[in-house]
Length: 357
Image 1 (cartoon, one colour):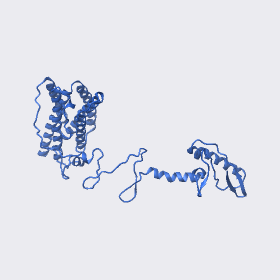
Image 2 (tube, one colour):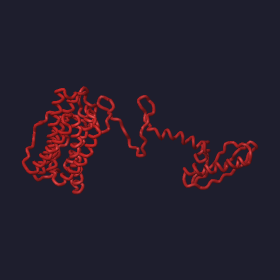
Image 3 (cartoon, rainbow, N blue to C red):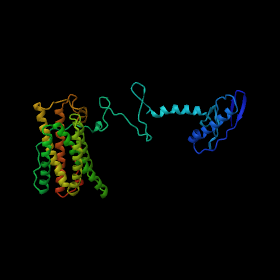
Image 4 (tube, one colour):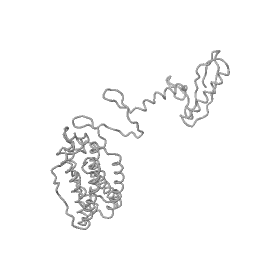
């Protein structure tokens, strides 16, 4: 029971609320209906009424007071709305503090997964989410760039001439635009490692056996090639028709390589080895154009400086050199994988060259 005081005296208003199933419906539709009924009764009796306090009984909860502080069930509707409004800003905030001591907005997640800020060795904040400081490295540019696997078997010759046949339309389309050429090359070069790693992953699951580290090696290769693409995106912005070409080429190459790897892994890895040899040649020509001054030797993108641990004043030429070194390492890994298959072994029987950069 609650009481309302009118101007003409005290009139007793009894409100019996139906037993409600949950808290939200009690404070929403049920309480609102009771309040409107009580208000209409007050107006009908004549005279202005003071604010009406409505008490609602909830199943298993009595409208009691404890230490002078009323429970949520016995609050007036206005007080309930005020409390809800006070809660909303707190729920929208991530609860963090920025460097100035002000509250910093963050992402609210039901899953409560903690996030942390990564810092470099010099204390500055790490600004990349796609790779972490412990995943960066210094490229080994002393690797032999002239090594070549001479095709001897029929499978080797098919792989070799398949790659050579792909070079002709590439030269015709890009000519001497090596920035765009490198970008297009990386959209293709990042596919084989992902396909090979995925198929080895499924094979490991089917056979209940380890992969010898080759799954991770091939996936690292795919990620490394993707980082090449992210770097050259900062140097040469692709045009709309080049983006359309990437979609078509990637769709065809992914499915063709998938089928080739299922039929003959030795052929698939050998073809990638020859593809990397062509990449070395393309980046060597890129460096020649930079040295001649035909391509501006612009400052290196920030992502390249952090990923390859280059000096702060590194230039585009430095980036091309480390990318070419990466391609040489990928050449060696894929020719090795093909040789393992040629010798009648499986990749898992030979330790994978993890961290071979």
